[in-house]
Image (cartoon, rainbow, N blue to C red; front, top):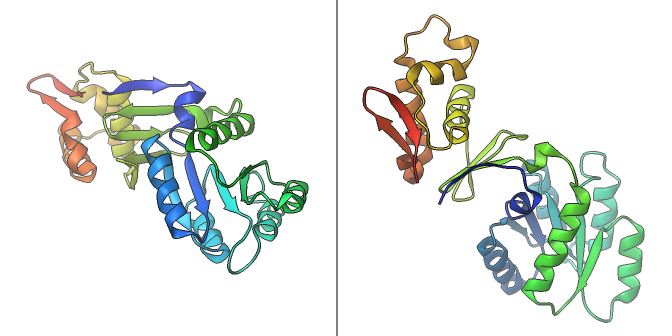
Length: 240
């Protein structure tokens, strides 16, 4: 099923990027599967070094961080992230054992946004994640505006396109055409309309330039390419 633009925070919450940092591989796998099944985009790290590298290359919307890590404590990592301007606004939920209450207090004092005690249920964890995300991004349209068609999602603020949760690199023209088609909600767009979406760079080009962009776009979308349908003699549209 596909939808057009969605501005509801609930939809965006289910497409948030979550970084899980824990050295328990079984727990990482379980949480990745559980959160992924709920629509979250999950990446994992087994120590602080991996976590910092992941944050630099693929900034998450929220971090689930175990207090006990092999190379440093989750509390120290929290402090480092919260004291670095580029990462200070990323919300952090600490994962802690029942007998680590003092660590929780310290973690919250250095900037952690919430905590949850092991063992915990997936439903409780998801509820806590949603609550923190809503508090952190209450009215940011760049975060909230999501376009979706089948397995394709677009976070328009970041101009980020994903297919089945995996990022896809598009040129500006390809991105503009894809957005225009999804925003049309299944209506047919002519080559002239799609050419206009390309912007000034397409001025003076023949309408067939759109066909070239569509061909490359379909190739990049891979298995999702079938969402773009050709309507002979009229143009293109998005389908389920």
